[in-house]
Length: 77
Image 1 (cartoon, rainbow, N blue to C red):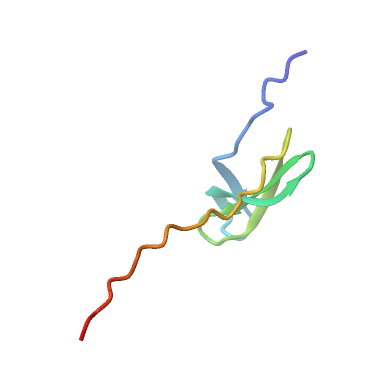
Image 2: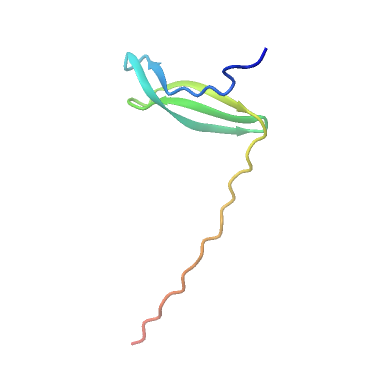
C-alpha cells in the first residue's frame, strides 16, 4: 500500500490555549543523522502544538561564508 500522506504539512492545528484552530508556523528544532525534527507553533500565542520528523539524509550544515570586505576610503587631512 502506498503512503498517501507521507509528506503532509499542517497549516492549522487546534490550540488548547486559544481554544480554537489556529494557523501554525513550522520551526526547525534539530538536524539529526536520520533527518530533521520540526515543531509546530501557534502563530497567535506561540504554544508548541506538535512535532514532525522528516526522514532522509540530513542536509549539510550551513558553513559561514566569508564576507566580502569593502575597502575603506582614507580621509586625507
